[in-house]
Amino acid sequence: MNVQQERDAICSWQDQGDRAALELLLRSHARQAWSQASKFTDNPVHLEDLAAEGMIGLMRAADNFDRTQEVRFSTYSAWWVMNGISSALARIKAVIDIPTRTYLDAQLGKLSDDERALVRQAVQGMVALDGSSSDDEGGSFDFLVSDELGPEDIVSEQSRSAMLTRMLAEALEPLSGEEAEVIRRRKLAASPEPYCMIAKELGVSEARLRQVEKRAMMRLRRNLVDRGFSRSVLA
Image 1 (cartoon, rainbow, N blue to C red):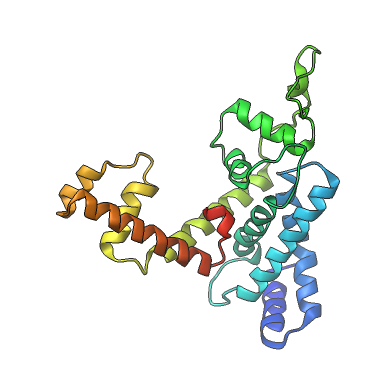
Image 2 (image 1 turned 180 degrees about the vertical axis):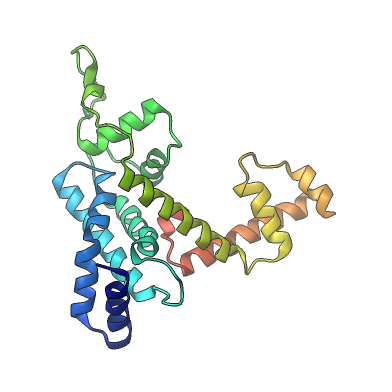
C-alpha cells in the first residue's frame, strides 16, 4: 500500500465512514498488530487476544490520524497499537499472574536479565506454579527465545519511541513553566535532582515544591489519558 493509497483510505474513512477503506487500511497493517503482540507471548490463545487489541488500536489510529502531518500511518499507529496491547495485558492470564507494569518493564529493558527471563517463561507457560526448576542441565532457560530485535522490530521500536516522545511533549505543554520544570527534573531526568536543589533555584520551599510536583503529575496524567494513554500504564 503506497502513500497515496494510504491517504485515500484514511480520507474515505474519516470523511465518509467508508468501511471498505477502513478494512483495506487494517488488512495492510495487520502485521504490525501481530508483530507487537508476539513480543509478549507465544501462547496462541493469548497471542490472538493481544493481536485483536492491537487491531482495535489500528482502528483508533485511523479515527485520530492527523492528515496535515507528513507521517506514514504505520508510524502514527505504532503507539496506538502498543497502547491497546499494553492495556489488554492486565486482562490476560498467564501461568503466573504478572502485573502489566512488569510486562512493560521487561520489554523496555528495565529488568535484570534473570527477571526478564522469568517474565518470558511465565508468558510462555514454562514456569512451574510451585516455583521449582528443571533438574536437567541448563534448566528451563534453554527454552527461551532470543531477545535480539530484528530490523523490523528496531524500526517499530524507534517509531513508537518517537511517538511517545511527541505525545509526552504535547501533554507537558499545558502545564505552567514551574510545573513542567519540576516534572522534567524530577521525573524525566535519568537521575532525579534532589528537592533542595530545585527548590533553591526556583526560590520556593521544599514543601511548596512537593505540592507543585504532585499537582503537575495529576495534570500530566490527565493530559496523557486525554491523548489516549491507558490508565493501567500510567498507574
